[in-house]
Image (cartoon, rainbow, N blue to C red; front, side):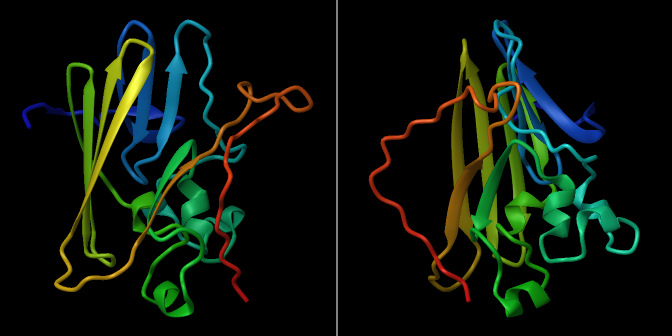
Length: 196
C-alpha cells in the first residue's frame, strides 16, 4: 500500500495518527493500537472513554518509575489504555506461565507498536505479535459519518491453536452521563470464564 507514515502527531501526549473528513476525525495510538478518538464534528463529541490518569506509551512503563499504574500484570496495559482496545490473542488475564513469558491481560495487541500508513480517508495499521505468532492489520475507512473497520489476523505458527479475539469498546463522558444515560442491548447469550 502506498502512503505516508501517519504516526506523526500527538494525542494526549501519545504518538498517534488521525484520519478525517468533513464529519469525523478518528485517532489511533501508535502503541497499543487503541482507537482513542472517534470525534463527531457535528456534535463535538468523542464517545470513547479517556482515562482520568496520565497515559504513557506501554513501552515506557517500568514498575519502579511508574508506581501509579500498579505493579501487577495489568500495569503495562493500564499505563496506555484508552478508548477501544483490540484484545488479541486473549481476553482477560494470562495464565501464570503466559504472564511469566511477558504476556499482559488482553494479549499483545493492546500493548504492541503499530506501523501506521494513511491515504486519503483511510488509515492502515499493522503489527507483529511475537509471543502469539500473529501478524495483525486493521484498516479504518471514513464514509461520511461512519467508519468501516476491517481487521485481518494471520498466524505464523506451524500448528493450529485457539485464540481469543475481542473488540473491547469502552464509552465514557461526556457521551455517557451518570444518572441520565441508559444502555440497552438485545444480547441474548454470553459466556463467562471463571478464574480461580
